[in-house]
Each structure stands twice: as structure tokens, then as C-alpha cells.
Image (cartoon, rainbow, N blue to C red; front, side, top):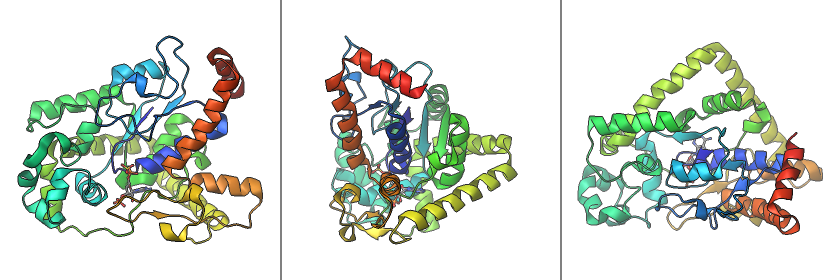
Length: 346
Ligand SMILES: Nc1ncnc2c1ncn2[C@@H]1O[C@H](COP(=O)(O)OS(=O)(=O)O)[C@@H](OP(=O)(O)O)[C@H]1O
């Protein structure tokens, strides 16, 4: 179970899970649209095909939600591996300010990011309830009590809940090291965790050191979590072995390079209007341009299919998985479909 937090490289991580589910014919717990009704707390009824009576089996889950462990446990098997991803709150804030500019009054009201940074409280107070990603967005995604002032006790309690709920916390800022830790925990192959950056903006704003500090202190609860889980992340790397980690990261980068040469028409990301295949064109919000990738045309069909999957954005992948899962459901009742999966997995 992956808790996809906002603006933390979650779309790239989700691509790994999509591909894995796709290849192994696993059942993904999918939302009806593209997230599980954020900002409401997650509820099992938000999962496509779920009902309390049949309790269909699911193997993987990973789209945006406001985390609610009790309800997630109704969907996921008891031995599921829970993980999530955090990002430095200053970088996260810069990303979400532009990406979500039209969605939150606090961002809309501010004439620009610099103005927001210089007086965030002023813009935030305008409409607190609709501003859930404008302050401590990761804390919000984790389902922790939002919109309350920082206290050390509350922050510590947040850490305790995250530690209790998740087996692993990844860091977007150390993405490749994160992928190695994930691969080790899940006993996966290197190719399972090779990715190209998805959902990345074409332009971004440079932040001055004092602006970074201000954004971290504005997102005080997120910063507390980040500092704590940054420490536990590097403790894990230490236990894994620094040298071994460096070797693994090098292998990962080499493999990415190989796949890039094999698959991509251009080795660098491409603006969406230059991508003519709908199935890999990234969604463009009103406020920013999002890059994607172009896949070579003259590849063997089986190779091309693999290359396309690595760069398939989240929204298109939902439909791919849904088409497979729901056509199966039409053909066989839930019980039989589960048996088929167990056979495939064994
Ligand atoms: N591999 C890797 N390493 C580091 N950073 C990465 C990676 N993949 C995606 N990204 C950056 O993550 C940002 C998008 O995050 P999400 O996909 O979680 O956004 S969303 O909430 O689903 O809209 C977005 O950040 P910004 O470009 O700053 O907006 C991406 O560039």
C-alpha cells in the first residue's frame, strides 16, 4: 500500500506500482476518478468494484487519498507493506503553489510566490477549509488533524502514528536511494524500480535561502516529520551499507541510461504539445506546463509496449488497469477471478 502524498514524486512511484500490477496481473484498488475523493477521509466505498458483502480481493493501492488506516485495512490484505514518500516542504510548497494555483484560495489570492512567502498567514486565513494543501500538505494527506497550530506534542504524536502505520518512508529528494530501499524491502528486481521523472514542471522558481527557511517554518508540522524521517531514512541506508548503496544507485542510473537510449526518441523531457500519442501525453493543469517523454516508433512491438508503460502518466494508466480488471470481472464472479490471480502469482 502506497500513500501517494501530494507533489512529492508520487506519480513516478505510482508508475512503478502500475507496471508491476500490470505485468503480474494483480488487482489494483482503483478510484472512480483519479483520486479517492480528497479532501474527504478515505472510505472503502471509494474503491471501484468494492462492496462490504463480497469483499473483493485487492493486491495494490496507491492513488491520492486522505489516509484512513481503518478503512484501508478493509481493502488491503493483512500482510500488506505500507510505504509513503515525503519531500522537503520548501520544494514541495514551490511546486504546489504553481501547480495548484487555481485550486486553493490562499494561492489564488497571493499575487506571486514571493508575496505568499513573505506573509503566508495573511493569504491562508482567507478560507482555511479549502486551503488544505497550502499549509502542511503531507500532514493533511497522512490523515492527521489539520489546520491546528504547531505543538511539539502533536508533532511527536504525528511521528508515532506514521511509524506505526508505515513500514517505509521514502524521500523524493533522494529518489534513487529511495528506489533501492524499496526494491530491497519488496525483494524486487532492479528493472522494477527504474523510472523516468513523471509529472515534472517545465519551469520552476529559484528560492533564496531565507525563503526556504520561511517555507519550512510555515509548514512546521511537515518540516518536523521531514527532519525525523530524513534521519530514519539515512539510518536505514547506513544499515544497508553506504558503499553498497552507492553501487546500487550507480547500477540504477546506468540502467535508466540504457532504457533511455533504447526507448526514448529524445533523451531529455519534452513539452506536452510535442507529444502526439494521447496515451503518454501528460495532463496539463491550467497554471503550469508539465513535461513528458516521446517513445521511439521503430521498436519491436513487445519492446515498444514496455517502453510506453514506463512513461504512461497516472491518468491513462488508471484506464488501462481498469479495462483489464473490469473486463475480467464481467467474465467471472469475484471468487473465480481471485483464484485465477492466485494461480498467476504462484
Ligand atoms: N524521480 C524524481 N525525483 C525527484 N523529483 C521527482 C521525480 N519524479 C517526479 N518528481 C517531482 O515530483 C513533483 C510531482 O509530484 P507528484 O507526482 O507527487 O505530484 S501530484 O501530487 O501527483 O500532482 C514534480 O515536482 P516539480 O517539478 O517541482 O513540480 C516532479 O518534478
